[in-house]
Image 1 (tube, one colour):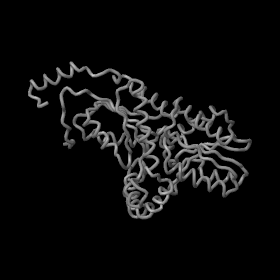
Image 2 (image 1 turned 180 degrees about the vertical axis):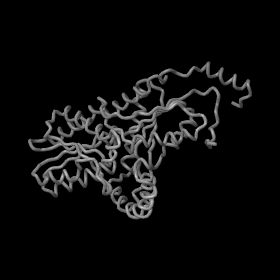
Image 3 (image 1 turned 30 degrees about the vertical axis):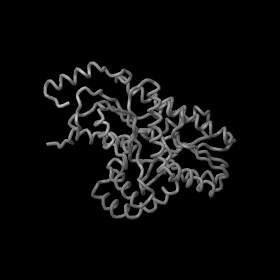
Image 4 (image 1 turned 90 degrees about the vertical axis):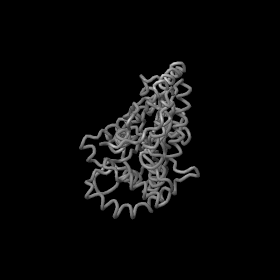
Length: 367
């Protein structure tokens, strides 16, 4: 028999709420080796993230990786850590607060909050809190523009695990992707143009590098649409910017292990361009809705070093969309579309709720 979690106290006559949960990948609690060990242990144990048989992967993960990588990763996190904590956490929380304001201004009576797939606050704990507060409709918004089994699907998996333990389940919806959403693309375009206004438009021979997080090539061969969706985002952005084919390139970063990953790779491309005499490179990472280790350390720091040491002269990282006003407005548009059919504008019917409460008490309900 399934074991369900205890239900929170129910108060008859309470209005039914609607909630929106922004979910990002996750972050360690601190830039320390122990915190990284906890975070990486949870992240790399997910079978969707590492598709290697457990009998093979478990000794590698627990015997080697979690004993060597946390200290190195902690040093990298320390280089980007802010007074308020992890940039990913800071921006995700800010996005939720700003989206709450936008939805309220548009007349929607919804609660907007946020969660992390790995680390804190966990998606399960956030769903517990929303359920206890009386939210019976929940829209989950994975903050990954391009769908991948190792990102978006893990959010759905985690929500499903929570639902399996829930007796009185809320109605739940999921956003799959927004890689070709017009508002998202317009925000990316505006970000690049704002950068060009500040530092000047690239000259002939300069390049725009559009870098996405990498995945093992095997994921594409097995039917994951991520590679195709990345290329569509990159192509549509380049078209909006009026770039010719030779003025930009779509690459993939953050390789891990010896297996072949999606190509071309970001770091070798930067090195090759530097050696070939490319003077300036601007880099944008459209797959990240908020700046994090992979953008601020790997691209903004390591990428710069790779390019300049190879002979390049000028390198710019264009920040993620983060809390840019046009991006938050686009996110509100996306959220609004996915709330369609749920009554989020009307005020609760106080008379009906009072009748419900009195009838419940008449039949013996305590409240």
